[in-house]
Length: 236
Image 1 (cartoon, rainbow, N blue to C red):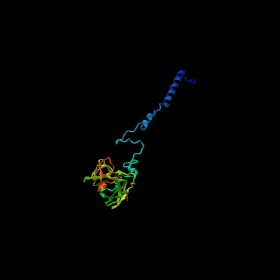
Image 2 (image 1 turned 180 degrees about the vertical axis):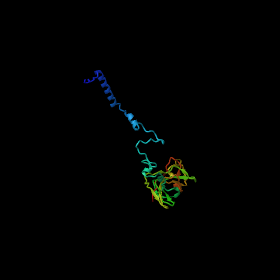
Image 3 (image 1 turned 90 degrees about the vertical axis):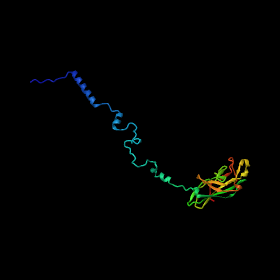
Image 4 (image 1 turned 120 degrees about the vertical axis):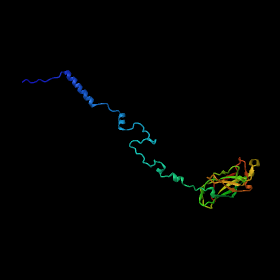
């Protein structure tokens, strides 16, 4: 029996076949890597600023907790425990003009030459304790209708000005130094007869009338002259 002889491919066909096989392996084993941009978009990670939500605020970042309904942001009144309503509801203890009456008394002797000290007394006529602190506004008035005469009193800022608590019936005083109208010639002073003082308690926009008359209380109508100086209110 004759043994079949082995078949051999021609060298050229073998080389071409090998090249085709190697090319197929390379195509299945590698490929272009995805770009970072494509990966980010496919994974759902935002690559740009979040768009506004329906209420106009920025949309929440994925995974970030949003405040629950009714909670206050950090640093707000609710977060610190303070209440704006409670603060607005607090009442002032300052004395109202309707709780005060005024009078005059000796202010403790004469001042500099040509001047006199007068005490203006404020009395608590109300039914509660209240406070006053600082300098009253003081000016001469006349004409029978409360018209101001001349300049208001200069405030003596060197005097102590503690907060004073007045109980019903108690009093405080401001000492007013009054320069005599006779210290100036009549043309400069423009002297006027007064009815008394207009007194504005510290912190108030209302005034009360304190009657005073006599030569001591003759006023200079000229606004070039400062005739009155007042201390702060003090106990006595």
